[in-house]
Image 1 (cartoon, helix red, strand yellow):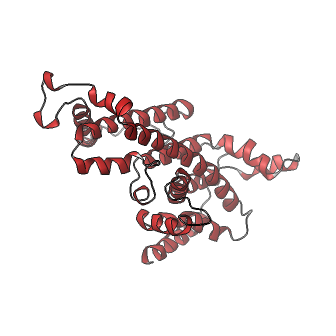
Image 2: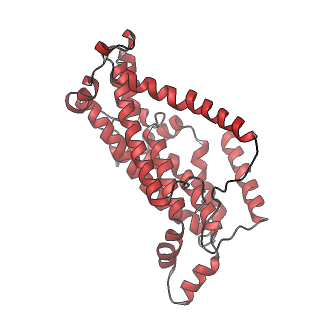
Length: 304
């Protein structure tokens, strides 16, 4: 409850601050990267960036790959300890692992699509004050960010596990849980993009006879392509590693990688875990690469 009250206060403060200033762009393009010279400081910052990348990304990823290629991780690095059997095992022998990877990609993709669609609708309706009580609607869309994942999972279990829904252990319930938990990400990103759009563009379409749906699909959504792609990628990536919500709602047929990782870690099967991690990293990298291809390499930095 205190976290929820704090969220209400912060949302009210945000609306008050944003109401004082307007950021309107005719083209819909928000901020993007612009280089500027900082002198010799660039070498210090470069060294710091390389150090952070080495300790947080490169070194852990190298260890993950090495573990996935090892017959026994405890034996260390040697040619006779290298093997591809771990990848062969998760794709062709351990059906539960393959199913978990497929479930993770499917549920994450479905959640990202739903969040992007709902996010742009909620953002447009609240920012343009189409819906009654727009502040309350926006708060309800953003409030789940203040609810711990496990608490949210318990609430959804109580609501949907029994009759008449009986969704416990089904993929639909996982998508509902993920959507509820991560919809605030899409709403916040889409709201920033809608605020950056010039309302005159929408009014011109309305004058020519277009309805709200036409404005949303033919004007707003195309101009916010970069924002929507960024929201999709962000939600997808977060869903692939979500554990607190999924661990309470998945069943034998709907387990995802995060839950299966927890189960396998208790068995000490670290080589299989590493192979799963490498596959998931490859999938996420491909999705991010597609996003960069569609919306440019700065798609996570722009508002629209």
